[in-house]
Image 1 (cartoon, rainbow, N blue to C red):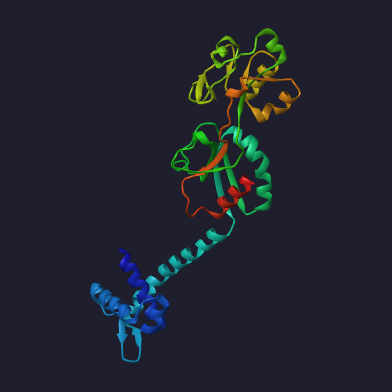
Image 2 (image 1 turned 45 degrees about the vertical axis):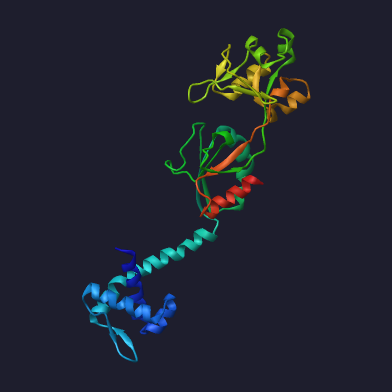
Length: 294
């Protein structure tokens, strides 16, 4: 059905109910002459008279009554559907589907999601935790949470965590056996744990100082795809590790771990929630974003 045909049927139903071109035109927000013209065109297309007109009144013909009975339920259903959108515009309810990395789940979501659920009992949250990068549109997610460098450029990205820094650390016992590295190239002579990514590659240690960049990819004694195992090896003094500063801040402060190449470890944008559109985000998603940004 063409859009003009639907408009004309809605106009016809309004005239038939109001029994007046003037009142129907006011309700539809158009002029009475434009409405009368539209009804003549509709009758011409259908080749049947739908409205009986006099100088004082207008009423549906028998054919018009039949058409009104036929289209009224459909028009009412459309109007009900449009009216129900107000619920989605204003009510904080419904389902929000998220994909999040393990780190995002263990930091931002673990800290903030329980309070959000208590504050919004009408919102259902479904979270898929995986380190694989998901296509949130094709896989039916409302949003994702990843490090900023992993978010596609065409996505709307909103910070939900602080700026982060990755540091290189080892124990005093490790440095009793190995002299601390003075420049990044010295890492080649050290035992460094490596993290195996889902792609199969070992994650690089990205370092930078005064515009100079250095990328080191460990190939040493121990490589794993589990952060806890890697951290255990570092804390045991078996190797150097490339770890989130916030996770080892206390150990650095009390001397259990020592930072090296600190000037080369620069801050980077942290976790971001991302979604595909600036417009018409469901209220439940907007409320979740606000809660995660606090």
